[in-house]
Image (cartoon, rainbow, N blue to C red; front, side, top):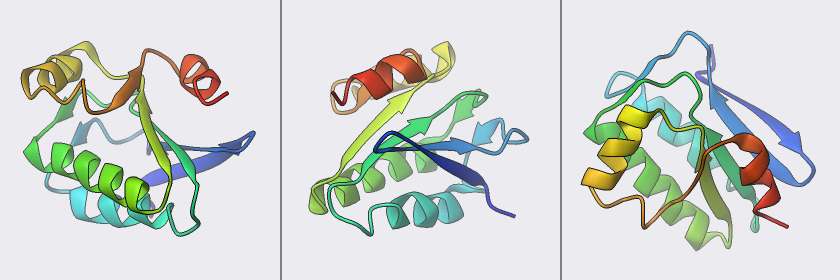
Length: 115
C-alpha cells in the first residue's frame, strides 16, 4: 500500500498522505522519502506536499522535508508545502524552517503561487 497519493493539477504534482496517516514519524519516513524524492525523476517538476490530516511531525519527518527540498533543487524542481496543522507550523517556526520552505495555508493558494 502506498503511503502517499499523487495527482496532477495543471502542471503541478500534488502529493498527499493516505487519510489513515495522522503522524509523519520514523515509522513511515523512509518509504515516504523514497516516494517523494522519486517524483523528481524528471527535471523541473513542481511538487506540492499537502499536509492535510497530519497532526504531528517528528525530527525524521522534518529530515524528509529537507531531503526532498535538496532533491528538488538538484533537479531544477520546485517543492512547496500546504495545509500545515497549527501545531506542526509551530515546530516549523521553532526549527526556523518556515523561512526555508514555501508554505501556504491551502492548496489553491499553493497552486496559484506557481503562476
